[in-house]
Image (cartoon, rainbow, N blue to C red; front, side, top):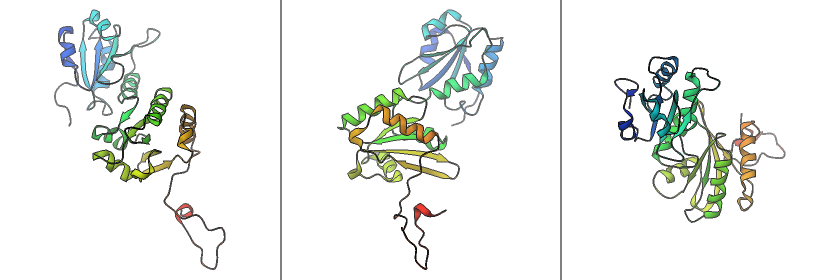
Length: 250
């Protein structure tokens, strides 16, 4: 839903906790007539963050410390993971609009996402690559390893955990091509303008570790992985008629 009215609301420190109670909130602390506040206001109108965050500003500099930052500074108040988080410009330079937006977007999703309808847009509409562990709820071993990997490799890719049998998670598993008898399994999806590329982790999950998850993600980011295709094997020899399969079709 598109916002109406001012892009950022001026609030008092007393009202801030009540106002900034939604999922994602950005709060500016400092003078309201300087370059820092101007950069914050420009960021609050940027299409990449305007509809996902609630924006607030206050001239109460002493209030900043209550929200883990200093003035001039920006606090990100969220309902998951560590909160609040702080952004301040370095070396006495004014805040940059691009840095405020980057701070907001890079911290807009949990370190480890449990897939739900809330994250369809974050992954598919915004075309963010996501590493997905499909596992039963009682599979603590793989879930714990995956959670540690999410912390160790935060920022490289979205980490998503999902089941395969209920609600929106069942629809996700069907879309990715995962069935209950395949669990646990590790997949990677890359939404693009042309469609969704899917990658399958083919190593033994009994050997899954934080290190080899990170290595697989690095191989993806460097372009070394090939998308998974449902396909027969490429024929070793060809007869009078050339047989083309999914793996060899261009």
